[in-house]
Amino acid sequence: MTRQPLAATEIASIADARGFWSRDLVSIRDLSPGEVDAIFDLTALIKARPVDFRTALSGRQLVLFFEKPSLRTRLTFEAGMASLGGVSFFVDQTGERIDAREKLSDIAHNLERWIDIIVLRTFAHATVEKMAEYASVPVINALSELEHPCQALADYFTLRERFGKLQDLTLAFVGDGNNVLHSLLLTCASLGSSIRIATPPSYGPDCDIVAQAREIARQTGATIELFTDPREAVSGADAVYTDTWTSMGHEREAKQRAMVFAPYQVNRELMVESALHAVFMHCLPAHRGEEVSDAVIDSTQSIVFDQAENRLHVQKAILLLLLGGGMGRLPIRSVHA
Ligand code: CP
Ligand code: NVA
Image (cartoon, rainbow, N blue to C red):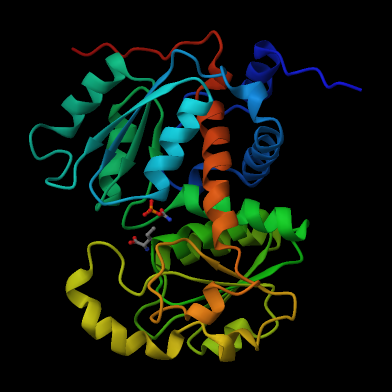
């Protein structure tokens, strides 16, 4: 039996009914637990039936301002927007901060007159928060010093594809208490899943993020455990995740960090502690021989390229949801005194 393609109105109502229209995605905290599942359900549909969505955002325009380099995030937003029928514009901000030339609020009030959705990669998390406050169109955090929400959503979507039920899953994160970990922690809490984190003392996750994740966990039944011993965290885990020891913006600490984090390398000896069926995860770019050995990242346990692929599908779902399915409702243009 031939399947009927989804009509534009059906796509719009699927996206619009979820109640995301015109909102921002600055932090995973912007999403209720049920909304994370709604993103995953739409992602699965888009991934299975990409052709049905190829004109969904026709006529819509996205701008990316990036203060830091990127391969995956930039290209998955650009390719994702194109595959939904929209267009994107990239502004390279690696030479100076976004607000170096003019006030951020002035930039926001320009952008909202021309552009439907804004994607920012910044040093300061406050830059994304303020852009979201000033601009009347949706703003997406494409990585700040505090969070990387699109990454964590793609990662947990990848785990859902692999394992099905996330409530019974334990993810072990080994390494730096950084932006990627913060978003994973909050997503885990929302999903009622389990996370075991091993960081060196003084390199743990942000206390406010941990407190907020624990608060969400009280409602969802999630389990959050913090360790300093990587073996304890990895013991019996279904997935082992690591990220760079030195995030962008901390390059001057790289030498010191290489010494502190050496016992936290994810290698074969550490992976042996995880469950037999365990997968290895990394947001990439990987620093082979530092946070992960070649033997692990190149092994059959590694799902790093599934994660990278799912950045595309998850972000397409996010774009569609924040733009109300692309139908009818045009962004409200703000009026300024
Ligand atoms: N994982 C990730 O965000 O990669 P990029 O820095 O290449 O965008
Ligand atoms: N924690 C890393 C993630 C890169 C995708 C960084 O911020 O540099």
